[in-house]
Length: 218
Image (cartoon, rainbow, N blue to C red; front, side, top):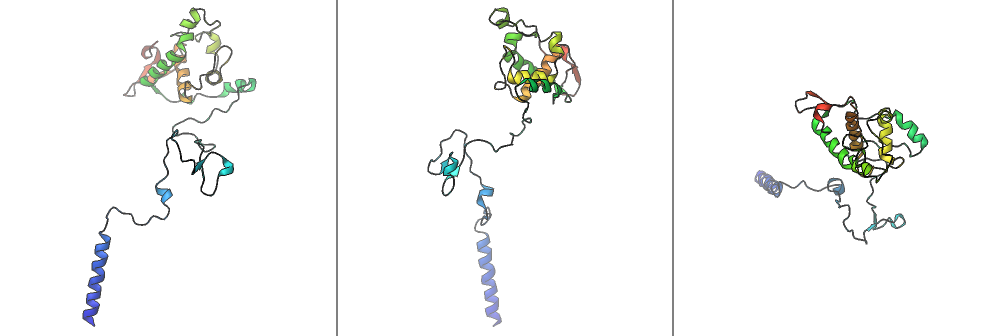
């Protein structure tokens, strides 16, 4: 009897050892596989029309609703919160109280240089490299009434109002919301303040504060 019990134990341990060594990388059975391995799709990739639909009325059964849009109320990682003021007189008035989110952040020289590059690409053609309304489009008589960004009228505008104008456009100036991200618009405004002799400063890679007029290319 003892021999039978002993042999049974040996056989059981052997079977257990062999089965456990079958695949060391296997995690075993997965209870909810979609929580571990999600469906990955490229934005503009074609999808099987027999499985996916953009029509809410067809959703259900074997059809999966997918319209390429992010869930409502979400923002992409690293992005700033949405700018919610409307493009009207009231929104323009309220924009004066909106603070530049980068005012309390010490910008590096590289960041201000990048802001200057974006300014020259998008703004310099009209406002000029130094903001004096002497860009090629203004001096070439293609566009009249270009604002002098270094003048008192623009200096008195808050960063929020300048952001509002860049976002929606005003007068002869169109919107630049599609050309510049929200972060880029705020950084360009910081660069414009350096052209005005404002208080923006930059820090080098060692953390040493550098005066804007000496570090930012004009």
